[in-house]
Length: 413
Ligand code: HEM
Image (cartoon, rainbow, N blue to C red; front, side, top):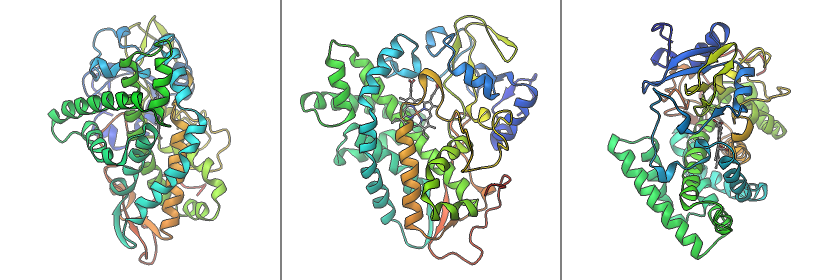
């Protein structure tokens, strides 16, 4: 964190160790001015109690219309921007309840066997020994397959769909972003038309059925919802799987216990989301009136950034927050958010992480980082923390096993 007139910058120093930067802010400047890389001035909120309360505060709007001066943000074409993360009640409530009916527990649980099959298939195609990049070979293809299953995208169309999505999230050239978004948009419009003509047992067909009752969801809202599910449901899962694996692989005792005792899986997944969530920040919010947070008055129209990553390591809420503890009690982390915008895909994400972890451990009885932990390379993003690559050695390991030094104390491991 560089001190530029005491304004927090999300610069290379900050990104080299965001946990340390957030720890300093929580202790000294829990609600503080910052500037995002695109030049938007924001207020950065870092303590658990403040972040949790703000996530549920109706005076903090997600609608860009409530943004005052200075906010730059990322502009989607309006046909893709009529989504839940740009809306407040009552519009948000209406759309969320429609989406919730398409996103039932039964539909999500029903995907579990296919997620398992997909994970096993992906891993079967990998070598028995040698070095593998688990982001490229596993963490990225798994969620794209899951999204395609959820949306009912056929096997033939998946390669195009994945390539547009990848280009949109990490464009090789700046102009690729617009091209990929346009292609995806047109594809989603065509897909919605096909599903309307021949409905299937998938989320799009379920949403169209809801949408066509009394026109309760506009066509723009339908396409924007699909686009949001794709964006929110892909990148976060890739990086949650990658970050979680890196954390487990540097804690051999946790790894060994997970192999022996699968009953630890669900609490481990929860702890991995607390400890390594890619979602560093919630979506920006704009106070509709002056609001006091942590003793600081934030004027209406300013931009507020709530740090979920910082809240989840707040020692006032989590004892020994720097310890990855699969048995942590009362783990009410904020990795999936809180309040009306709580992640609608959290149950699906949990299944993907859990199933992915089990399939990987089953496939490779011997698995270790191919690099020391502190040589792993991270994406230069202040919003979404994830690895550029996760090189591992699979199969027979040289004596000594994992050689990655532990980056944080491991009393629980
Ligand atoms: C580990 C993976 C994931 C993480 C860490 C994550 C995180 C989050 C967070 C923090 C929010 C709240 C944002 C805010 O209040 O500002 C959110 C919302 C959302 N997420 Fe996720 N998410 C994940 C996976 C998914 C998946 C798999 C899907 C769908 C397939 C999904 C769909 C959504 C949607 C639609 C919203 C908006 C909800 C609303 O505004 O009412 N997410 N997610």
